[in-house]
Image (tube, rainbow over the protein chains, first blue to last red):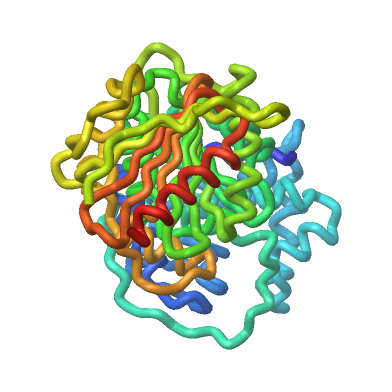
Length: 293
Length: 133
């Protein structure tokens, strides 16, 4: 599994106010229709470019980092500034997408470009959120030629921010999700933290694309489920809740972290529960004695 | 209708897997068992499970469930969870709200987790009996 360790956003200081502000801003994106493609304007504060409601590019006024700098410093020694800026200038002149040109040049890899875009967009969105900017317009684009590989869901942005509190823990959580989730399921890992008013989402799989407020709401409910379960079965470590016919959430916890897999079919939920049941019987998933997510 | 908790662990037939399931009905509003006779050593667990009902069913935002369902390709408005299953290394707990008796849920506690499918089948069969009765 590909774990993008360079996703971290080192220049952002995460606190409860930041998470709340980012949740509010991402909520504006979640409210757009599924196919929303175009530019979401935030007055003079900046813009977010979306394709099918996924985040392709974001810019905030007064940003401290530039994509070219992020890309340059992915290599040791850093890529020559002139080489990257030359490609950037050419793209600006002839309208070629910068990502395609950078990949074609061989200066960056797909993984490196995705990580750099993620870092850039995460910084921009956090800055927009902290400025309390409100969206004041949406310009619809009819062209949808942005490569989906280089776009991000609102959940991914939220998780990247949450991962900053403990990057190593977030990478371990992402591996746990990758190793456990089954087809037709998508999920998140969360922790209890002073950084967030409720659950802090610290990792998601790449398919995780739910309204961020609703994802946090589900994580909070799951945290409460394990809290109350502790009163009569302290070793309860996994659960499933079904609704709406075939939809289910499957949750489990490992040490201090909680995990949620949202399943679109009964079969997927059954596979996930079966797998967790076997792990529970073998003692491979279990709660620690302390407070858990 | 009122049922007393009962154990489903009668004498096993040769070659069959014995299920040890204890059932009870509980109020989802108050979290109390509606009939606690006969639960034996599982009574404490059933009481604990029953006590969680107001929290589990009263704190979920059904709007969130609807919107998540929509993203997963589901449809229709959600009233609440239709079934909750809780697993530990020693027990499987099942909560099944009754459609025929709103505000009442069938609770089941089974020892062990090696046959979750069988436990669920037994609980759903029990639920069918209650719903049709």
